[in-house]
Amino acid sequence: MPDPIVLTPVVPKEEIAFSEANSVVAEASSNESPEESLVEESVTDDAPQNDSQAENSSPQTQENTSNDSSSVQEQEPADKTAVIETHMENIVTSEGTKDYGKILRRLLQVMIDNSVSDMFVTVGVHPIIRVYGDLVALSEGLDILTPDDTEGIVHELLATEERREKFKILKELDFSFAVGDERFRVNVFRQKGYASAAVRYLPAKMYSIDSLGLPEIFREVTTRSSGVILVAGPTGSGKSTTLSAMIDEINSNYKKHIITIEDPIEYVHKHKKCIIEQREVGEDTESFSKALRSALRENPDVVLVGEMRDLESIRNTLTLAETGHLVFATIHSRSSAQCITKIVDSFPAEQQNQVRLQLAEAVVAIFNQRLLRNVGGNGYVLVTEVMIANNAIRNLIRENKIFQVNSSIQMGQADGMHLLEDDIVRVIREGRVTKEEGVKHANDPTAILRAV
Image 1 (cartoon, helix red, strand yellow):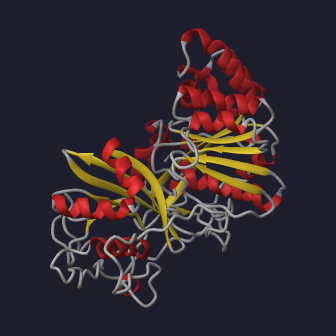
Image 2 (tube, helix red, strand yellow):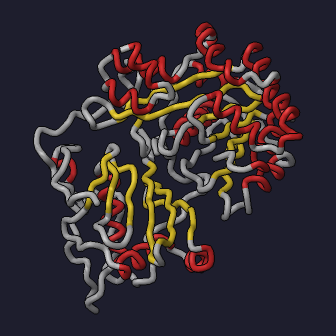
Image 3 (cartoon, one colour):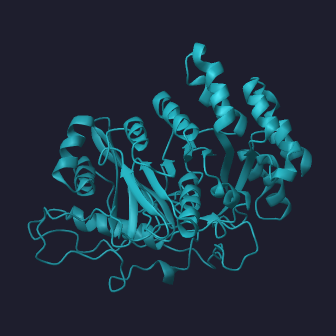
């Protein structure tokens, strides 16, 4: 269990202090009904732009990997220990009960003010936040959470009676919501019979490919008219943030019809040069697979799939790419080679040869990424692996020689390819991350140890 904070200096204390006058999250008026909701839905076309997820820059606060002065800069560490203030005074109603709406608003403000990627609400501990990877207990003005506390906070998070009824039945629920210009992604669930919640903060700023420090190849592939582009990596590696930047690149420069299918919607895009329609699983469609089948009849040029999570969604994603659409998707894998294997192995054995042929023709690129803590411990450094589907790669997929993919990536530097370990070694040599951090995130730790 994390100790109550007076902990790592994240930002100077004067930047942490809660200012009710300047708060993005408006306090409820004194005559607000206890049943009035904290959150307002914000998935409409005129909703504020958002930057993740990372996950986080986005909730993950991706650090720039270039020298562009307009890019995301890491913060200077504070000179002294800072206490994260929660300002939990006056949280009891006139009836003597806790005002969980007010408590939640102030917890969300702490997330906004302090570069917090995630917050955890669970019985038996104080509310816990994740600041640059570290878990920190918010004990100032708050007791350890009781079952009544977590039920009250989760009740406020759910906001609508429809969601509350769904949660009673399903016992777990994903959704997103907006407070002013700020968005949050939430999973509420039960553990040992008690209500719990994991809340991810999605900063409002929409980052570009340049501001995230992504290699130029990320921009180049957005010019393609068809095929599938996969962004892979573990949970919390900033995949959603990278995808939002690539979609924004298309939206800013080309006249296209874009459909996104997400669970839930994380980053809200405005219409620029493109028409963008964002569909949320559970709200706007029953499932990824149904939305993908429907997309074939909705005349899109570009489709974003929040996650290829099952056989049907993988099959429909490949079908969309084969039928002349440009498809972006995320998948959980640690390398380009593992990503290919995971897709093929999702199908029954008798279908796998055909799937290899489909994938070999459809794949444009696989980008794998990680977020490594920087040397100062106050930000992240984004590292990537890039696989571009040239003729050699396509032949390896067709012939099921996936074990040779890494060698082809190494030989494809002229096409913009590199392995994850190559990028990790680069940022270690630049003095931006430690060797220990690099080894921890590498697929082949020995390659890091040999190189630095």
